[in-house]
Picture 1: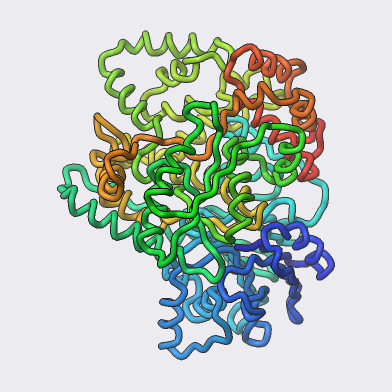
Picture 2: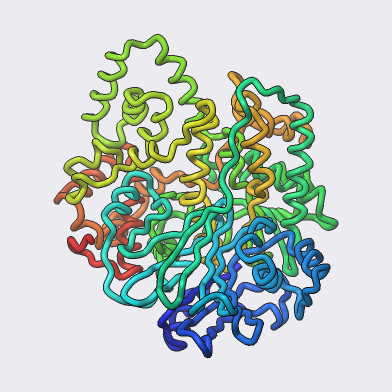
Length: 620
């Protein structure tokens, strides 16, 4: 796991400065390379995981400088791909997966991506005969576990793992991206909060013509179609296949030249990953969790301890700290493009704990989306049934009444979603600012792309309600919130996180073979996963728990210094109507549930400060 950077028209001095801003992603080595024949510079900050020798360092160059790569991520099946390449006559100087990626590209071009099982953001400079003035091949993994930002214009092209790593210059807010962020709490790809930048989308690759500075993008992978309606599926066969695929995914992700551990929240997803690791590892696994004692459902530590004890794991637990000035300033320094998911805090804290003992951690991300674990899937199904007999006029009235209620009132968001219909229900119950709450709040909101409309534009047309909603989250919420959160929090601590549930073979199985009826039943969610949990754990374990590393944000905010949050929000305040943010804070102190909204504004303000975005009305 690393940080990458590159620029057409850049200099070695620029590269050294930009890579230096990625040192938290790669503390083991920072190097910059410039082509002797073309105006391109590549930089890399290395977190050594596979092949710790100098032979694994990057940028990695071959063919007398005609090919050079910077790579962030891991290809877990690199040994298998290497053996295939060796059978075709390729030779290798070292033992890293990066060299395998480079030689695979030399042999197969962009089609090499289809052979890889892993996570990646990569750039390969290619000046071999037939490439004209040279090319830069950029690619992102199928699901979007690793980030890749790009900027094309003004006679240059630049890319990086984080926005902070780009060369400094005048910057402005992108209004469409800001509108989406205020609604969703994240900026979905390909949008970026900084005007002129964008994110490469998951499952795509791009080719830059270095001489002409033109960019073409292609999709090499997409989510599979759902099972055909009425297709027969034997539950026991599917359960056996799920067990096999999870064990294989975990086995691959235990390949490392550095110590590994498992994030264990106590929920089904992480418990199954820990159990698979314990079954696969020849030595006791290390597990890590965070506790919030006294905060009810937010504290999963007793379940995590019980799971770890059952598995014979070496378990470490951290008590979540308060949102003091010290803890807030510590993690807010790492804010890049803003993310309003407050679970980034415990993820950061537990990553820092884990990094004291390991360099790689496995997590449970992806299970909810694959097996319908989120509550809003079951809610949407219930509302779909209710809408069959509730009068349309009553539903519309409920939605209109909800729209005039202040944000944070209990039940407001649910009532608002009733008007929209079951498919649109998740889009109408977003965690941050919906369309009515933004009206009169954000000065620049009129006519901008609303988050609700964006989500509806991404909703797949094929499949039943559960299949469509889970795919929507896999396209949007998972890569741009959940995976972005894990990447930023873990890499801030120089820790690599791996996600066995998002092995592409498991994704294709869960979406293409498992019917919704074996995910969400009238009695419970994630049915097939729970069957596997029941097979691997005794009856005394609770398989209904679903929390993850989520903090009691509303309570923590009420107990934290108001002046600190005003300071964090400060750069963003001129974007909003006078007094509105203060009223939101005051309402929260009196019992309204505005924690997510206030946290979103604080992260926006911190991002603007960290990225050098102007504080006034400078919107592109």
